[in-house]
Length: 145
Length: 271
Image (cartoon, rainbow over all chains, first blue to last red; front, side, top):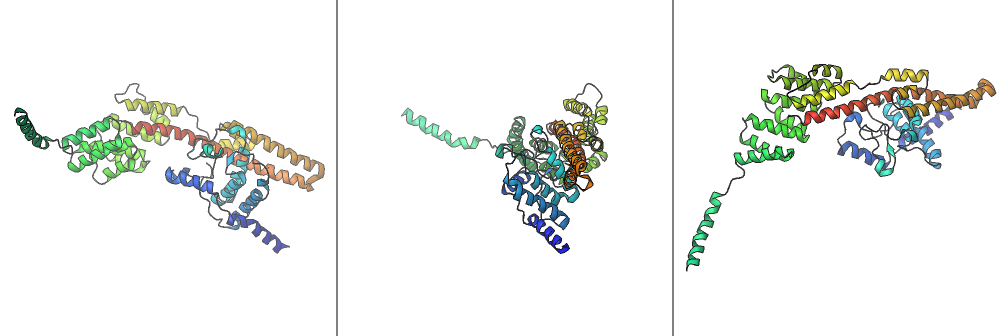
C-alpha cells in the first residue's frame, strides 16, 4: 500500500516535468524581456523544471487538475495564465510555501470586479489587446509582487 | 558675337564655383548644425554631431558637456556615462555625470561622486541631492530641503512639486495589511486600496467556512465534507493574509513607480 502511494505521488508529479510553457506565453515573455528591456525585478519568469518532489507534486496535481478537469468546462477567469497554471508555475519558481500561498491568493483575485486593478506594473495587462485577457504572470525574483 | 563672348566668360566663372564651396564638416559648421539639432530637440542626431566635435577638439569641455546632455535628453544614459567614464570628470561635467548616474540607478557611484567633489553652483548641488532623496523614497526630507518658495532654477520648482506630492501619498504597511486580514478576512486588501478583492475574499472565505461548519455540525469531526471545505477555507484564509501583504506592497510599488517616472522626466529634461 505504501509503495503504491509513493508511485501514485510520483505519477502525479510527472506533468510538472513534462509541462511546456505555452507558446503564446513564451512569446509574451520574449517580447517583454528582450524587446522592452524590462528590469529583472519586474520581469515575468520563464518556468524551469521542478528541482525536488516538494515542488513537483503540487505542481503536477495542479496541472492534472487543469488539463484533466478544468479545461472540460468553460473558462470563466479573465486572467492569464489560468489559475492552476499560475499555481504550478508559482510553486516551481517561488518554491512550495510562497507559491501555494500565491496560488490561493490568485484564486481570490480572479473575478470581474477588479478590472483595471494591478495594471501599473510593467508587463501586466499586456495581453489585453491581443487575446482579450489580462496577463498577470508569476514574477521571478519578488514573490510578494 | 556678343552672345558667344558672354557664354565663354560665364563658363569661366562656373569653374571657379567649387573653389568657393563651403566645407560643411569644418568645426564652425558642425558646431552650428549640432546646436541647431539640439535646439530642435533632435538629441540623437545632435549627439552624433557632438561626437564629431569632441573628436576634433578633445580638450573642449563645452562640446563634451553638450554631448553628454544630448545623450541624457535622448534617454541613452549608458552612452553618456561611457563618454565620461573614459576620462577624468572635470568640475563642469560633474552635474551631468551625477544626473546620468541617478537616471541609471547607480546611487553608490552617485554618492561617491558628490561627496568627493566641490561644486560651486549651490542650486545645482541642491537639485542633485534632493533628486537622490526622492529617488530613495525620502520624500519629507526632500520636501524640507526645498521649502523655499521661489527658485532661480525652474527645475527645482518641478522637483519641489514632486516632493510635496510624494509626501502626501499614504504608503501602506504590508504587515498591517496582513494583520488586518488575519483578524477580518479581506480587510487588509480593502486597506491596501483593493476593496473589490477584499469583498470577494470575505465572501469566499465566509462561504467555505460556513460549508465546513455545516459538515461538522451534521456529521461531527469525521465529516469528509467538513474537512474538505475546512481545508479550502484555511488555505484561502492563509492565501488572503499573504495576498494582503502583497497588495500593500504592490500599492507602494505602483505609487513609487509613478513618482519615479515624474522624477525621471524632470532630471532627464533639466537644463
